[in-house]
Length: 402
Image (cartoon, rainbow, N blue to C red):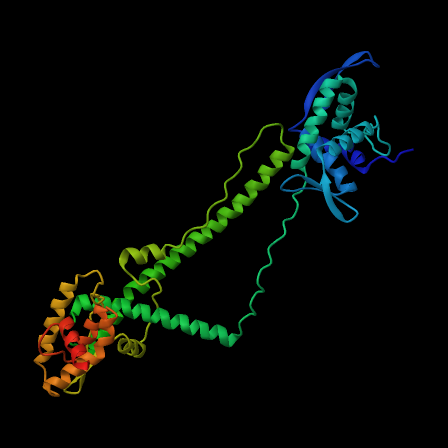
């Protein structure tokens, strides 16, 4: 006696009826043996593929769904499971279904099992073949996906020590303090300008008053975001409850499809938008007076002493207008002549000839390389030749050296 496959025994259990409520079809079939029409609950091909064929493949394979086709494990290796082989296996399994399964209560079979058995026995060959083909077509979607091989990744770095974490925090903190002070100096230039000196007490007082606004706005934004996250947690709990009810309706419902609940989105942090709107530094932090004075020095604030009192002159944070390479040579030549005339009026350090040689020697290499912008920048820092333009002066030096 051939042993009954375990998948058939599981499919014949009465609990199989619960998973087929939404896919079962009632068919009226004529039974020649009983000479009577009877209503049978016939499961769908997708239900048979998932709860009967796929289970049977797991017992003998198991089988998996790959990107190209189906594979089944045999002798420790994955081999291709062709459609014709799956069709033959399906036909053999359905033909092995007995009318009753020993060891089961409630007439030894579920209603869907009895309906499937009667349907395959009573319908004509054409309809039976069409049903089996539909079952075979539904098997791949009922199988588990073949696990993809994850690409090898670089090993994770070793966890940082407490000292390394503390050092990283100090670096981030220092950067945030610098950004905060830079934003204040931009505001201070608009308030005090760059010409007048401001007393140290007034500058520190302005900094403390200015800092209150971004710190207060950030604190309000953090409180608002915390409240929104707490509300989102409550909504997430309700979502989980509605999702559980939705799944129960889908699995054990009476044939209608309920509306799936939508997962609530987490709230966005409002602080970046507020900082951009009001012109606050994004990483604003509390900065003490001594640390602020140190950052003032690093950022170019000039310190002055008048009658024992400290004053500060704030530099202009606007970038210097760079000399552009697309300027015409005539424009560069004219500016070089103006710089030369201005530099000639300075103190007479050496003779005219020495000043000229000093200027030419330092710029000849740049001029020969046709780097007019570089030559002009260096010429502005030293005394140029007293007569002639930049290009003519280079020619004169070349002739003298020859």
